[in-house]
Length: 208
Image (cartoon, rainbow, N blue to C red; front, top):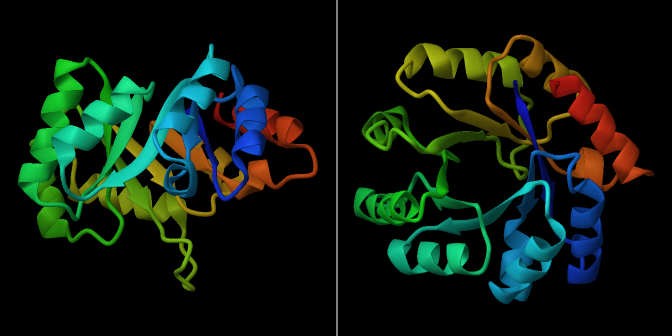
């Protein structure tokens, strides 16, 4: 079954906590977005952790350096899944991976603007979640399903795949129906909806 991850970004902390509480038990994973990490720091992880009793918490720290320290801190404050950039050095990613394995937690590798050659090197991190990520700043349109099909053909050894980047309900349903990914990551199509809970429920039904 495809999991639904809801990303909370670019809102005041109090609103983020309220949204997390709303999505608790609806989303499989609630994401504390990078903007929240930058605005409020690791201490804010605790506040989201307290209201997430039925959903996992991903903290999108986008580690590029000091991998062991950042991952130890992220898990210490309550993250279940932490992110490292695929563009980071292999040594940094290996340090993050070592911490995640030691703490029996999960690591997500963000493949934003990462070359195929580098992805081939990243396959060694077998228990990691790999995230195909289409930047919000990019102006070109993309087909999420086609991107995943190509990725799976190019990298058949990667067994845990997530996808992010402006996904709407139709794209989410298509990805889930074809069982193309393990995790669909949705942000503003849920959090900026007139009724975020109703929207989250519709996306959850689409992946179930």
